[in-house]
Image 1 (cartoon, rainbow, N blue to C red):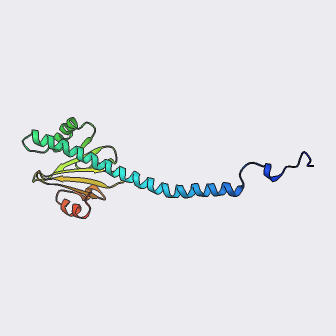
Image 2 (cartoon, helix red, strand yellow; image 1 turned 135 degrees about the horizontal axis):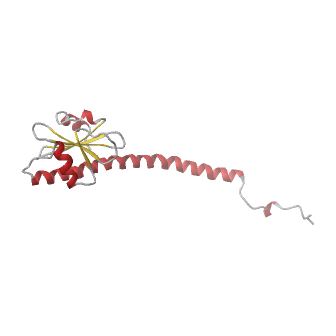
Image 3 (cartoon, rainbow, N blue to C red; image 1 turned 180 degrees about the vertical axis):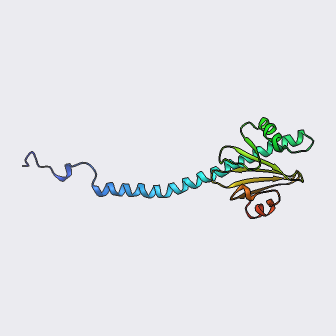
Length: 160
């Protein structure tokens, strides 16, 4: 007969250290797979947010263009007129200065071509060039690298 202090191995409950380590290892492997996927999805979403802001700004510009004898809103007119048409965006003349805050830069060249730019949270400059008959999209490392004169070369190498 057994004494009161003696237990058989069968009576013990719980996990061994090896079993716990295997579970931790499996969780670590799953995290190693999931985290890069999540970060890639987040970066893609940030880029799409900047692109979406530009499309909304272009829609506002097209409304202004249609209502004002086919002339784009530029300069100070763009800031006030477009803000009334698209209240969720902040319009500035020239290059945008803040990334990821719904800020869109509006400029135009001597031919009347419209250039819209937005900084994504990824630090890249997303741009739309509209001639009235054709719309082109580009992405560049900085907004200073994008202008109506250089847009064709930038868009050819890195469109959306």
